[in-house]
Every structure is written in C-alpha cells, then in structure tokens.
Figure 1 (cartoon, rainbow, N blue to C red):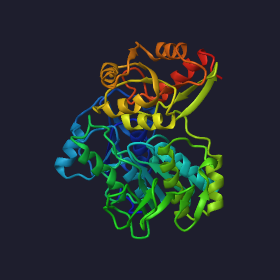
Figure 2: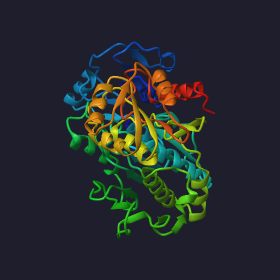
Figure 3: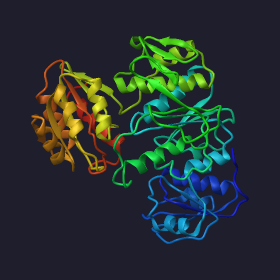
Length: 438
C-alpha cells in the first residue's frame, strides 16, 4: 500500500457510485474536496460530509489530486485541464488501494469479469477466508474503507476505464480473461483498449500471480501464467481442462460434470478463479466444494423459468457480440434469440455466424436492430424487429415449441431503452413470467 500524501485539495470528477464513494473517502481522510458532474445531481450525503458539490459543471478546478470516475472520458474539460497541468490523476480504485491495507485480487477482460469475480469471492469464503466482491459492478472499492477487516481479500472487478490511471494499484493475483472488440466508441482502436486492460499487471511483484491470454506478456514483474482450455498444458499453465479442472500444484480439483456453470467460456472463468483461490492458499477440496455450491450470477445465463417446456434464459450482461457468442455456445441448439440494443461500435458478422448454427428464429429490439438484421440476413437467417422487449418476448414464446430456449443475448448495450443491463434483464424476467414461466 503506497498511502495518501498529506491532505490537500482534491477534485472528484463524476458523481455516480464510484465518484461519490471516492469523495466521501477523501473527506474522511481530511481532504478539502470539490466534486463535479456534468449533470445535476442530488448528493446530500456529500454535502453533509463537507464536500463542495458543483453540478452541472465542466469548469477546471485547481487541485493537488484529481480522482476520476470510470464513466468520465479523459477528454472531459476538468480532466483535460488536470492532465495538461501535470496534476496527479487517479482512478477511484487507485485512491482506494492507497487507503485500504487489504490484499487485492483483480479481474478484467471484455467478458466474464463479473461471474469470475463473484465466483472467486465465493470460493474464498467457502474456504474459510473473509472475502468481498467489489469494483465495476458492485460496491466501489472506496466504499469498503473502514467497512471490512484488514485481512479480508478484496476481489475487484476492473473495467478498462478503471485501469486508465493506476500508478500504484497492485493486486496480489490478477487475470485478463480475454480481449475482444468493445468500447470502441470510447477508445481510438483495439490497441488502446487492450493497453488499458494490461495496466492491471503493471505494479505486480515477482511473487504475485498474473494470468494472461496465450501470447500476452505481463507488463509487471510477475511472470505470465496461462489457463489451457484445450490441449495439453504447457509449462506456463496455472490451470487446465483435461478430463476435469486441474490446478498447478493441486492436481485434479473437480470433474466438469460436478461444476454447475454452463458453457465453454465459463470453463475458462472457473479455471481462472480456481487458480487465484489456490494462490490465496485454498486446497483442492475447498475449491471443489465452493465450485459445487456457487449459485451463479443474475443476468448471466440465468434460467428464469420454464413455460410449456420452453426455457427462458436471461443473459442481459451479454453487452457485446463476443459475450453473446458465448451464450450461443452454452445453448447451441433450438434457440429463439432476442438481441439488440444501443451501439458500441462493434460489428455483428461473427455473432451472426454463431447464430446460424442453432438459432431457429430471431427477434430484435433497439437502435441496432437494423444492423443485426442485416448481419443475420447475410448468413440466411430472417428476423423480426419489435418496438420493445415485451413484444419480442411474447412473439418468441408464441413461436416456440417444447424443448426450445428463449435466449436474451443482446450483443449490445442497454442504454437506448433501459437504465442498465440489470434493468433490461429484470424486464425480461417479468415478461417471461407473464408468459407463464416458473
């Protein structure tokens, strides 16, 4: 833990969950805090803590340190001014890691982050350790200061946005699950997106665990290790799938049939989480027991019910084509697909090719419906566009037969019609229940 400099004046840019947690943490640490947001916000808890809230505001504010919320791009005027002036700019997780004495584990990747984060925290708790899942999709890391004991393992889901300004952030174990096209509405190219992800490893030490995709080098001092989903494990393998889950140093941990998570992508998530749990000191028996008892994560291949033999599956977290392809891999046959949403600048040709294998019918919603329809048409699949999710679910169920799967795998963000992917998944669940799913 690097620690904070002596208290001075801090600027927090962006007042969603992470920004609010950062502002409160700085105020508790004795800093004079100004918090700004482009939109009008209601922040009585910040004002009560002595934080000066300016919203809406894009004005530069002189400060000794600037903390940026992940949703705020580097080009935002207060941040651009800070970079130009040479003022230290930190991600919210960088700030928190300077205050919290806890051992950290970091998980990033285009897809699979939340499942792996929740699974790892579950494994650690099942093995008798105190552990908290936090970060990108849950409690902000800053929000745990003073709330957890110093020995608790903090399992941090890290988005690329959170990893852009992390000069000292050091996880004892870290994994980059995968990199596929995403957020190209914010990054100039895939190289910039991937570089942000790899910052997760930059400050690791030789005894730390760094798991990266094959061919990727670690930018830190920890040697790169691999998970092997296919074929024989190499000398760098830390976990592999050879008739079951194997972890280096532990041997066979569990048969795949004993692990409830479905799909090839989840095998990789399981291998990463198991290897990281072993790094924290868990043995094979505790890891196997934790894997068997993991309940899964809402909105990620969540079976929400069955009606007349038709299974409804909510994978609203599939917010890009690669994640939706993984969902189709988990359900390779007799799928009635529901897809579409707001654009992230990604192509849909690979998604369409994957849909060609087992999709019986496709129902599309949202801004990207015409683009996805064209991609599906190129591989010979017809689709129907709908004004909203409710009509899409009703039409999908009306055309389904017993044994079919109505799969929500949007391949897109949710912000054209919903507040979040969680909101979209909740609406899908409600629509499925209206069809009689139980």
